[in-house]
Image (cartoon, rainbow, N blue to C red; front, side, top):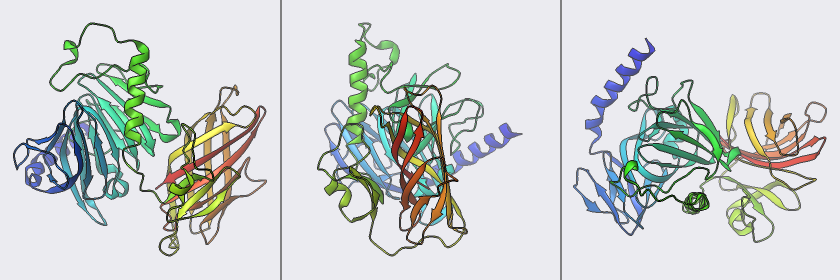
Length: 414
């Protein structure tokens, strides 16, 4: 029955698609090098700043080509060289989630996607397909690289779900696939990526850059690659450079950020330089090194009732006795506006610990959006705040362990 329902939905979406062919989807904000728009209602043309984009357009870059686009819901897309991306569906009306339909098909190459209002409010109606896998989001900034055989995904913020295309995961259906082979990746594992090879049973979690090979130019099939081996270090360095370059391409448009009191930041640190973090923001909590900055424009407008479950956008944790970083998994944060309380959980893995350490904290929500854990109920300390509209959150934490205190910072989105 589930298979029949999926086929019916896929058929209906296929019927609807031609009616969207002339629908405005976004515009080009920057184009460099060989960058073109092909297979569109307006015909093939060179991409240029300010050029409108429609549903059905295929964005293509050649060697050295780059293209940045902004969608109608303020989503941001960045294409790297030798990439091809089709805007398959993009229906969005402000405040109306029932009609939202967002689907991209990455035919080849590397792209960074920062979810806009449509994807944030209707996560179950967003999809990015590659030739071998489907990507659903949970309010996300992610990077994906793919050819006809392999898909690699790294998450900058939020979380994604990667699943192989096939039975139970159809290309024409929106949202994350809920199959046994589906795997989630969160920003708490920024030094990791999900990798899926055609024919494999499921995606694998691997270190960033492990096993990557330089993707072929457009038009080349994986079997036509040069037989000369690519040195392993070159493969890894090339992959990391691609992702690092993309990470610097698009500015985050978040209300909550961590900032350093000094002018510089260290590599792999989720904090920003002070002047960048402080622009239009106020400090909520912090320590001698960093502070949590919150957008200070507009009134405090927290919900008066209900409960919000947040998704981890970013996390950083170190062991105070060694300064070595760990990883965060299985993160949750729930805020009840009825009882003005919150609860949060983080599973933390660290090389110095034989077992996973778990932070469990319960605390109060103040009227100004501040979050503070309650001693005696929590096994660690938490201090943070919500954004003024209650859509984002951040906190710093400390968790005692036998090897020393685990300290870290987090950022969250709805």
